[in-house]
Length: 366
Image (cartoon, rainbow, N blue to C red; front, side, top):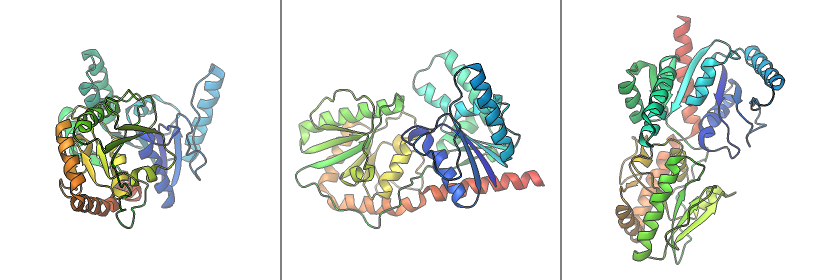
């Protein structure tokens, strides 16, 4: 199968580029040919059999040259499937004359309309977003999204036929550990969150909630430390128990050293990428304390078995104290999460997407 992927790429290889990148790698590993077109080359540039197209910018002659190059590459590639990730790329694909006709699959990941509604966009802005998302959901041959909740939102809001949409969850590229690691923190209890401050509103909301939790916790137990992994500009914390680690080279090491991983996305912080970090926590054998929004899409995991839920800052404080004092409960949650992580691998998700591609191609041949 020849698969053309259209997506964004970030320099760090995380965020919105994670899903299409690792799916593409696994498509290739299972013998399929992949051409990956994106707006700029990131740290993944050079991966075998995956080509990246530079950002189309500059003068008219440069843009014309880039268009011709892209036209030739994609048409000579002769894709069976064009897999498009996220709304901004679908809008480009539907207008672009550089891409050949083929079966088209749109991976929405999450709903931009729902995000903008929660973030307080204007009525005029919401109307534009609604129309753009309607086009993206009704024009392709098939739609993929990340959770049953988002699937339900699409089918009810846009009257989308349930047969034309399927759920493919997120995953991790981290191979699950063979056992839950022991804590190495003797005099302090470390809670770790991954919250890059890249301008995305959901991440800002989550960090604000974390800082509120830390502030309340300092008055209760100052030995509990909150470490924040992720780059970007961070606000001044309200308490001395918050440590910003920034972008870390040893991501797995930073997570493994923690006693507890927190996912502090409030209800209005609808988001997608954070679920990748939940998958990372699970594969590294860490107990997880999260809001319901943070665990959206993990419907095959159970509260108090693979994770613990909390809604407010006060509930988080109470649960952190409880888990600090109950090592056996932390261990059980971590063991169950580690076991579940074997199903949250990108190789598993790639198999699910490929099955959808094959079904669509077989249907077209009939």
